[in-house]
Image 1 (cartoon, rainbow, N blue to C red):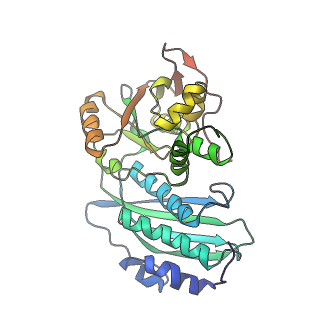
Image 2 (cartoon, one colour):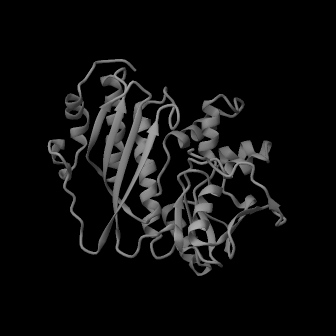
Image 3 (tube, one colour):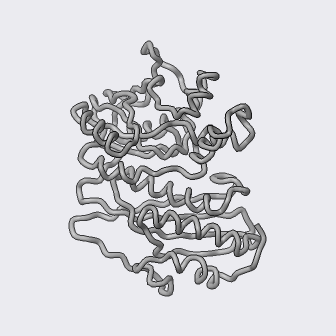
Length: 326
């Protein structure tokens, strides 16, 4: 990781100023300028990464940058917002030289082009370690069409995009687990841990369809619990309905009890939402249009909390409902 030493201003000039959009003013002023269109609301979110906690020290810097950006874009998607800009704050050890910064900036640049966003500014400080990174993302949504966690209603169906549990298994593979898994399946699961795919196309299209929505970061059970708590409802989830990727299914077929742990594993960054049963055809149509599986996994009821049931409808107790930050 060592390399050419750079001071703060040289680092900004070489690696981050080229990423700035018009509102960033070349990163030469004290703050950025952001226009807000009439009839729209800005949606703002922030996430922090700490080396050794949210990413591994040996992870390639471009992948660290892309994941940091993408988890924030996932938060915007969960509010049905379209991403626009971001701010970046870094606290990095001096041992990270120009080569690391070049890789980190390259990853940001790749995803800026992919998602149509740009950098507005931020801050850069030194630390003896570990490295700490914070990114604030800004999006927009038509006023009144933002989707919050608090709108779930008894009778709603519960839906989730994509597949659940891949990131949990990807991290297990990086730690030496499942050595018998074929290389192509291992690579697919590790990629899902390192570079999640925020559902930025799906989220805004769920405005007016979803009653409540959240992205799956701490685990499906825990995050659905947040919807239940803020909406003052209960949820019933059919464990057998949780969507699994082909690679995850290979592992679960040999270890059926693992399905429960995948429901609490976290880092999936899929969209978990509730909607009226009348919206089913619209959701199926969206799934087909985007080429993205959207799976019904349960229902909302009066009450509180999340209850998992097996194929016979019997309650199954979760041993680990989700990730806890503290």
